Image 1 (cartoon, one colour):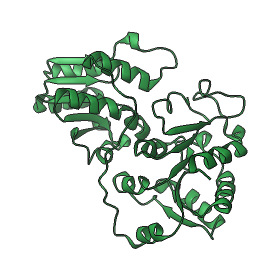
Image 2 (image 1 turned 90 degrees about the vertical axis):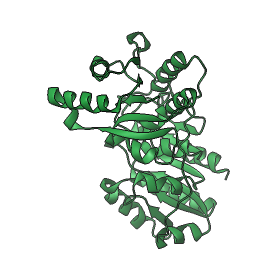
Image 3 (image 1 turned 120 degrees about the vertical axis):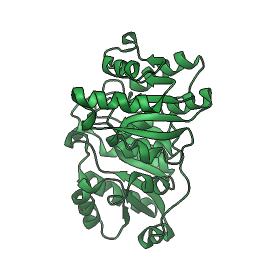
Image 4 (image 1 turned 135 degrees about the vertical axis):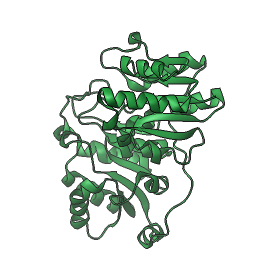
Length: 317
């Protein structure tokens, strides 16, 4: 049996949130899945060690428009899938799957969607209705222990201290806590306990990363800016905590079993944290986990004292 799953959201965090549902489908049907996903979700990196997933088909600009849709139909037709699970209610994807000759099509119904949709709740309801069994929302990214022989990595891990991932990057400025706050947090935590910090960000965050390092030159840091997600995963898994913005690294760490503290300044906290008991939350003053949204704009109302107190809790210091 060949089974396709379609998940077209852009983010790494989105892909992490959907992971337990993909794994549940694979286990129930006793077959590894093919996933159709956007490259920005980094699905190839996330599932490189997961036996529930055997192949990733990448969605990109070449699949847009009439010609691109035709190309996608032919590609899926050549795979000869028996079933497809579509994690959205898009009419386009349904038509694509019908024309690709897929006999059994399971897809979100419009009735599943509500205002301020909570994505993990919708995905859970859909998966359970298809499989006729309960499914956990807790994500688990499967990673082999293959830390690089890079001298910088070895030196970092040989140093004494609690390993803390700092998620200083974000998809936009309204979701990014000011660097001055992170520098202050680094100093406070380092005074309480010997710590070393993994700076989580991509190549576009190099200026931010350099600023944090320059402002705290007595602290031991390791940057992930030049590493792929695949190579970052076994490093992140060794951390004792994640502290930082609501970004893909928050969800990766939680899915690797790392106690995490997410700062939700401009995104719906419940929708992006409620799926995992590993994610602790700080929201702006006068907001609740349920009230935050993509229009909160609360980066200047995140209490430093609250972040410090929550950080001490998850680090047990």
